[in-house]
Image 1 (cartoon, rainbow, N blue to C red):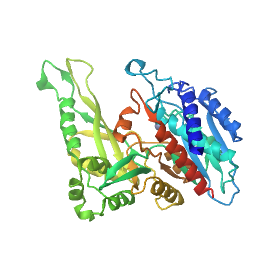
Image 2: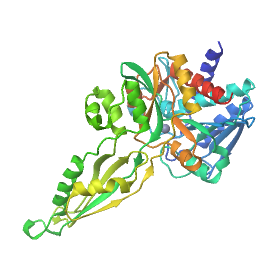
Image 3: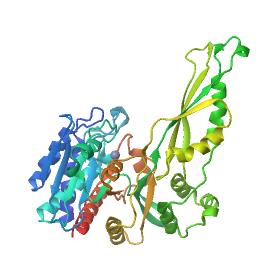
Length: 431
Ligand SMILES: [Zn+2]
């Protein structure tokens, strides 16, 4: 009875939120922050808006704690990526309820999660919940682009508003078959994104007389081949050890490569990026004219390092692969790559919820290949931040296809599950 009420409450709020266009750029997240503030204040939750730019507000709401236990942040972002209405079966800003789903841009990434968290804290406040430590809800701007008006800016300029011991954010919760039984993926770490540039040098000349030049593009082709063939040895992290344990057995590090090769293909695709550096040449530029042989050619590589590794750790292997050719190697940036420990009360709360709600299913930690706002909290405050929003009804492959794409929608059953999950975590940690 109570959950039916909360389900309908969440569906209604999500429909309203989806009708607000917060495509980033430009974002325009203040309209979402105002809607959420009105909803939360109706339930007696104290709210504050923080904005570097007036149209791009971050909302932080709080149930103050008794100060004798850990604080928890329910983190989400209100901006979305763009939508091309012609590709959709419904208006992307309609919030339409159809076939048991709420449709609209951001339903999965991540207005559904925003609303589940808002409903969780609002309903707890109405029940008179007094948490041990502060229970904080933050719906921030600017996650999808990152021009420093969202969580990164809040962490720097208003640290006390978002500093907590624990955080639940986006970036996990898929239910996948693993080792013969279902498991929910909980993102506890992220790889570091460290793209680099390789510049190959030759000697320019007129393309009608190739013999007089030394074509840097052709030299770069050889370097690209070597980069593409480069394989980094796999290595176990605490996260992947726990994942293998769930699969039934942690391989001997010396036979790790073979153990990975023996995994079923879908499991291997999940596990492989978590075992080592991943590198892909993605951009190239050389001559601007058909008839000019380039004396310089620039290749950019996307490169993802395991958390804990730095560019200096992998550069020797990259240089060894590139060999003796004439080139420069230059790192463009190095961002992310933070992790949270696994053995925590937050982990226990998540595992207990799944054990109760979906008996027989496990929870496994994963290292995400991409970047989320969890990074800023880990970096600024050492917060234990996990990405987890359980999704049980929608197939995870379908969800992955819909995110940032047409016909994005969330199953009402998953939205309701999210509300129950976030209430459980808040009540458990705040007990
Ligand atoms: Zn997102």
